[in-house]
Length: 332
Ligand code: UT7
Image 1 (cartoon, helix red, strand yellow):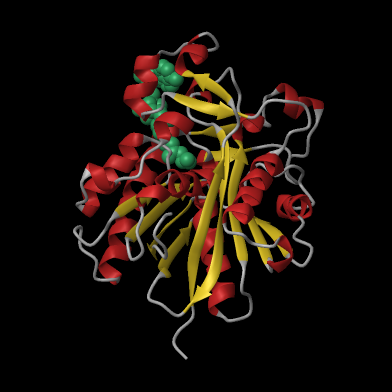
Image 2: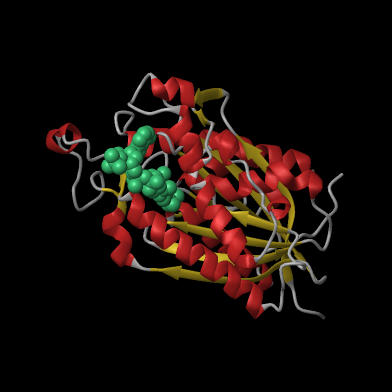
């Protein structure tokens, strides 16, 4: 028997209907469409509106669509991993809520929190369960309702983030496709530059933490930018080197959508041309754990079996890394 690899056998995304445009943001904070477009590449993002609507809504819609599309019985799912930094509640895990929503009665499920690197961390974790031979069907989700932790009076963050998510199905294969390699890194010294200070065990919610607006995501944008450019580019290049891939061998760069300038710098470092760079930041902004599955969903129609994809991400933690994925099917 050959080596068992974990193949992505389906992908589905979900974004809510409400479109928050740069024009609307201009009415909320001191900013301009021109500034946002040139500094980030973002034109609009989606927002999940409505009372009692958490990240599980985004995640369950993506997972349900994935089951339908791949003709999978939810009872066959062994494991659901949901990457998110905006869980419905501190506990239980959003993945538990999703498994109930979609009828995955035989699955166990849990969340992974690695901020913008959450989806690649979760994907490699799910793949490892498949490669071990223990499980046959794993759903990996990346979803975030970032609007729930964004301060819409802070122009340095509110223009960047949006809501959305996506899900992939992982199944075993003995072919030379699937999750081929990954490198993940973390450095907790980065915590001070990108975090949501209150609401955890260190600073539980009080009237004071709410008044001080400490339940919102904050970042030192310039510092995060510097680390993100260096590490995403370095690790995308490292994973290529380690797998003897040159720029011609790479069909697509699938990079976390935080800032178009960071993605462009990563592509330049890899030597890949713009036509090989998956990009949808202009329509969804930064959906944190959602960006990479949303890219795969948007570009699925262009992908062919055997295509070489380099995934790269950088985010809060700091966390970062890169993956080499060989696409496992031709889109129908
Ligand atoms: O996904 C997780 C990881 N996150 C990231 O990777 C994000 C990394 N950081 C970034 O993408 C960028 O740093 C930002 C988009 C957040 C900011 O862009 P920047 O080019 O680094 O701008 P800056 O923070 O250096 O600010 C430049 C100027 C400042 O004005 P002064 O001090 O030069 O007068 C800001 O106050 O731009 C001002 N500014 C704005 N102006 C108009 C900041 N935000 C805005 C805004 N509209 N929304």
